[in-house]
Length: 409
Image 1 (tube, one colour):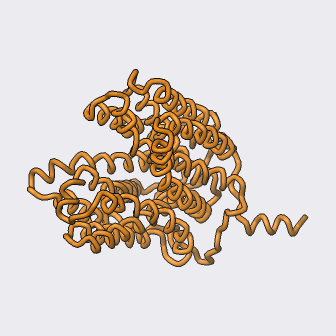
Image 2 (tube, one colour):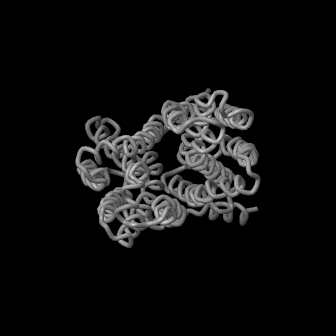
Image 3 (cartoon, one colour):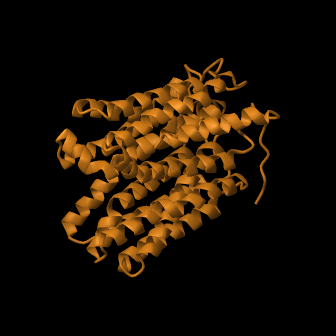
């Protein structure tokens, strides 16, 4: 393991401002999942109020994933025209507006709010890895770990607080309102970031394209396949366990282990990754965890559901954190980190959107969950290959640099 030396960041020697920047990044991360997942525990109340079908309600969770895929590819274009801090502030404002629209009684306004929410979250999803690299180049591992943990905690709070807040205030709108107000609170920490030295709109913005880079494609598919795996498991693991004889409570507890167990992996994988020139040993360990969990579910899901779910959680948490680490470790500068994040997340979330549907279709066709689990195992092999290649100690090369190198030959 080799420690790599990075340049000073804009907050070097300014601990108070650095602490404010950390809070700003973490508060932004906390806003990226809670406002989406809060609808899950409130499904019946929301359906009754809006008078919509199950398929109509499912669009409240499917539409944001589609937005993630479509919007992500536009973020590098935006960063060439606006300071990233200003984009982050704009994203938080749009998240708040979208969340407010989702507390209305009009399904059309709720869908409009969902669209705004998905677009704004996609913007911040892509933007934050680049800001981590720009703000804290010497602490990229720790900051990526904290970012990944905060994503999970934000999602967990969204689910955990939904029913208690609804019961306390007597309406499902109150837990939804929390995620409309929280972005406005977060803005208090982002406004001072507009004055950060050395982090703003580039003087001579250059378009960074990575679409012809093999390393960028390997990282893109690693991100996409881990998203496919996570959203498929989060959607169908309860049903898989119930179909093997577990009751709803047991299946719910086992499924909760996916997010719970992922938290330490969210934190420590990026820290380890930043200290290593090649992250291939981490790719191997993550693959073994995920594959063991899947094999257990395929062999006998009811034998040790908590263990299988914990292994899946360790694998998904580790894979997400490693993918996020690749965005900053395989890039030479902030523009490349943003471009790589955009490329990987645009394709990644589109893959994630089809995962639950494809697994459900396989189950309907075959009549058993084993066929769906076999597909996930096959995709884990491909994901491992992409992770192995993406973990090599080299950086991505933009298309325009490749063209220049070719002209010199």
